[in-house]
Structures are given as C-alpha cells and as structure tokens.
Length: 237
Image (cartoon, rainbow, N blue to C red; front, side, top):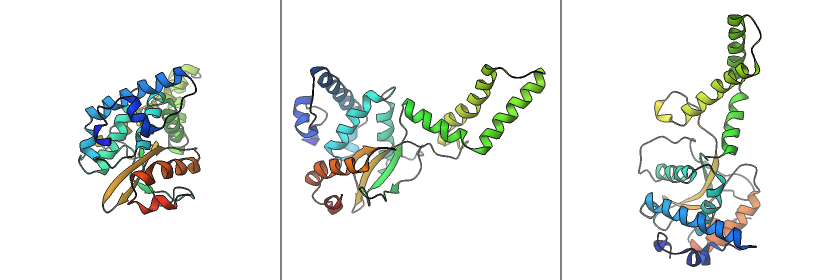
C-alpha cells in the first residue's frame, strides 16, 4: 500500500495511520493535512527517494506537524535532510551531523535535526543565540555607540533594533549554510531513523522536551510489524 501513497484516499490510508477522532471537526482538519502532505510528498518525489523505507508512523507525524507550522517548509525541510542522508544531493545541512540516541527509551536509534518553520523553533534558536557572551557583548557595544552618537540614552525601540540585528542576521545566515558566513548549525526537532545494512529506515518525528517513552511505544507498535528485519525495534522500552 505504501507504493500507492500518492493516490490513496484518507479513509484507505487511515487503516494504517490509525487516527482516532473525538469529533468531526478534528477529522476534517486531519484529512485536510493528509491531502496536503500527500501532495507535497508527490512533488518532492518521496517514493523515488526512499522506496518503502518509511513507516506509516512517519507519515502520521508529518500530518500532525503540518498545521503546527507557518508554511509547508517544515515538511520540505525534513525531505531535504533525508536527501542529504540518502546522499542524493550535495548541499549542506542546516542542522549538523546525525547522532545516535542514547536515552533509555530510544537508545541505539539515530536522530537527525531538521529546521522547523514555527514560532517554537524561531524562539529556541534566538534564545540560544542571545545566551552567548559574544552576542551580549555586541549588543552592549551597539547600544553604547548609539548613546555616544546621539548623546542620550537609547529608546526601547532602538534597543530592540540592536537586539534584532544581532539575533536576526545570524539566524538568516544559518538558513543559507552554503554562504559559509556563519558556522553554527541551527537546532531543530528530530527525524528518528535506523541504519541497517547501509540503508536508512525512517521511523518517526520527535523533538525536544517530549516524552521519549511515548515515542518508543509508538515506534514499537507501528514499525516492528512493518520492518521485522530491524531487530533493534524489538528491544525498545
């Protein structure tokens, strides 16, 4: 059925996605997200990229992610990161190298960050930036120079402009790593996958500040049936 992903309707797909609905409005929203994600995957040649090495849980997570973001770019960002993992493109990742998960519940699986087009992601990356002593020093220097120039204290609007310059410009630079202007990678949420015999199996999406035990249970429920060859899944807590 995965090979028909581009064409099957929501009712057929939901036999595998296993969404449950408490009300009709929720069902309508999920269906709408399903068809939007389906169209995006088709445009991005998803099946040509990974074949059947993706779980229905991964698709379910994409559908749940879609309405949480500003635009379709988060889904595209995920696919772009997977293109890098599959070695079919040469452009640089926005989010650094993959890592092996070491926590109690997902131990042994791999994660690859992706940049999420959302307020949460923007907030986290800007907060990470402003915590740096070098950035704080630039803000202080900018404020001091402006006060000397105008011979009076800066206004709140001027202060916000200085802060914005020192946060926003690096953030934009990090969205274009090919420029080699800014070396630090963006943080983001995770693609969870497993490498088996030099092939990647894309299992789920997950993120910071979430309960790993829940995702481990979901992966075990969905993925052990879909990928019986992946022995590691049987040992998830």
